Length: 425
Ligand code: SF4
Image (tube, rainbow, N blue to C red; front, side, top):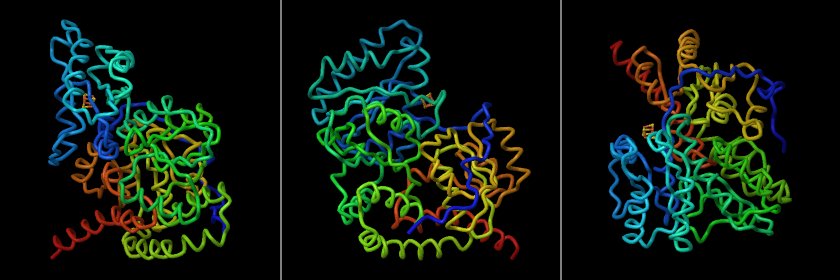
């Protein structure tokens, strides 16, 4: 079976590149899903009270017996250079690790304030590794909101780990990107039913399960926002299996097929393993996408999921994409999705928010996918919006979630229609 490619996809569409004011969310957000995944890790944000508030607000009201993230607050005297922030950080880390022997991986996460005062967290991680290795491995990455979009936090975190992974000479499949456990299990079950293995995950649940990497490693991404991690794995000699992302029935099938071909899985086995979940996915999408058919969608750049999601909405849910904005466009990563997205929409990279708002108003789309900061003002102007961040917090990958993914987009349209009906009565 082969993919039904549009006569002209968007791979060669000229990209509108904008470098103006941006409306994006901060990279610290990734800690919320990463700390759930990595069960012996601790994320120590070196930041301000604002960073601490953001984390607590984003984490919601969940109470953990022992939280796996926290903030080392930079006080006025640190910011003014009156205190030795490095010495304070060393003290805080020593106290934390003494109290929490379960921590095996410690991430020092940079923030706007730590970057403004030029606190060198790479050197701090090196110094702390000297003190706490081998029991604890200390990494550092930036979650700062100065120049990032929120999904870059996960990318920076995983990219920081890649150079420290053990060398490997085994032929292994590495799946890269954090997924909720239930979705990860579905992914592993499909691969195992096709006889594909060994399969390793990055991030792993525990430090002891971290994969090795080398020239025999082939890797597949499950998130399109992992540009730096992709580059870091290539530098370690691993090979990327480029494929559309596993969103929707078609995306999931294409992603699995690319891996199946790499591992020489027969067509019969592939069909036998995928036929039933594909049929379930198609049925669920059909039910959830009725409101989406014939509607127009506009994507502001935010989650970096925009291109694969536009492909899903256009090809599997019958929508028309007017503009697909993405913070960054890595052709090596989203090229296969661009091939499938029929030519027509403006493909934009980066942002000049005022200009983009003008284009959005002129287009008057039925649905606008955007960040939190734009959603409320646009709703107030009568537009129907979908918060991009929900797409990262909700299980949306693979066959069993395909209906829910369509539902995430159809729900705001259904709600708007119900409100209009109510107002008319
Ligand atoms: S944008 Fe900067 S200051 Fe604000 S929470 Fe994020 S890292 Fe902290």
